[in-house]
Amino acid sequence: MLRNCRFLFFFCPCRRLCSPRRLLMFGMLLVLYFITNLIIKSENITAGNLDRNTYKHQAHVPKSSLKGFSHLKPKILTLPAPRPISEFVASNGTVPCLKKGTKKVDKEGCVCKNGWFGKSCNIPESIHFSKELTTKEFLEFRPATARRIIYAAPFNHEFAMLEAILNDLNDLVDAFIILESPFSAFGVRKPVRLLPRLHRGYLKKFHSKMLYLYLDHFPLNGRKKGHIADSYLRSYLGKRGMPNIRNVADDDLFLVFDMDEIPSRDSLIFLKAHDRYPEPFGFRFRWSAFGYFWKHRHYSQVPAGCTIGMLRKVYHDDSNLVRDVHHGVTKNKQEEFLEYRQTSLVHPWFLGEVGHFAGWHCSSCFDLKGIRTKFMSAQNADWPRWGSIPEKMSLESIRNMVRDGKWFDGSNLNNRAESQIASPESDPFYAPPYIMKNADKFPHLMTNIYTGEYIEEKDNAFYNSAHTLLTSDILKYMSIMFLIIILCK
Image (cartoon, rainbow, N blue to C red; front, side, top):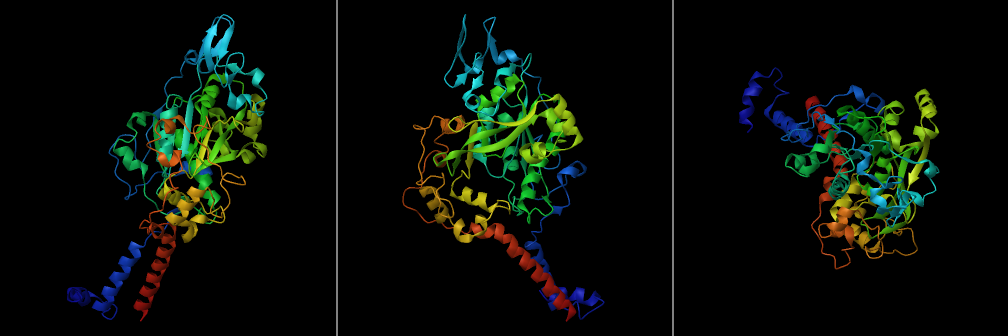
């Protein structure tokens, strides 16, 4: 191999520098550098200047083989015409009745189903038992058409939740904005999991409503300050997603969730069919961890929605501000917000209450390897950062936590003195309908399957994760240092 380098040695102006041995070592160091080249593509981009940045080619992403799903540029999605309100509301000639909440309509009026209230059977229990909405008596059905809904969420590896959202809410939601990135919230390069599957026809019957966004960079300082990365993802959903959606009206709704947060159908039907409720609004979810069986005794409260008018005029399509009530409403002194408040009913409120939830939030609900991926992908903000502790990320350790209903520090998951397991028999609001209907497909979500004897698995995946980034950086800088030493000798 050294002999093959003689032609370089012959033409090199500095023969001492280009000796065969040095050339060989130089080549090896270059290979080492590029193999460990995991430098994060950080850009000085904030939510405020997202509009000035364009999509760029990423060689590691599969080429688009299906029209509409590309890492280069998202498709243009045109919303269908609003559905007539008659699809949601029936009448006996004098009293309108919400079809979803009405058992029958007779001469006397609406006869409500269990869990529905009001003269028109139009108030689901998530609102009836909540003290947040103080304008119930002023609510009105929409006069002609129902509101349309745009649903936005970032994706990492939550395939079960994505399937549940699309299957359960497809007929109520008019557009789904799904965001994926080759970087985790921690700033580590990760596989692009969803896009290749979409190219192969995964969830094909929902493709016409899906707007796929590809985030090809990581925000500046996102690794040092994890909340920056988290906020940036949510901002990107609105800033990049909304300009690609056509035929949108100011009274349509925009919802932004994490993928493990799933609103109930009843709550969305209420929002679609009514006028004269304030904004922004949020949801109080049934909260569980590792599976729907470890149920927390409190709710998970999530600010999540507003009208398109508020999103555009007040937040300038920055969907992260929908989740940030403090800066979006309470401390907002901007002129456009004060003007909007003069003509619109602005007051933050939440659907749902303990025992009468507005949806489900199943945190870290995966199989064992999925749970590990979740915590190793987490942002660099919540301390202690369990994903950075190797012994906490072993499959055996994670399995023991799921089995016993414990957290990483040994505390109980559901904030009780002793962990208590919920079941579909004891909890009528156990899990989203799609998960319930496909319990055999998601056994790890429905029941605690880790109560048997543990079978050790070969597991080296931890060292191919977040800490690989640090190792590769060290090797990379070492290779540069050795290269300088060799060239200077």
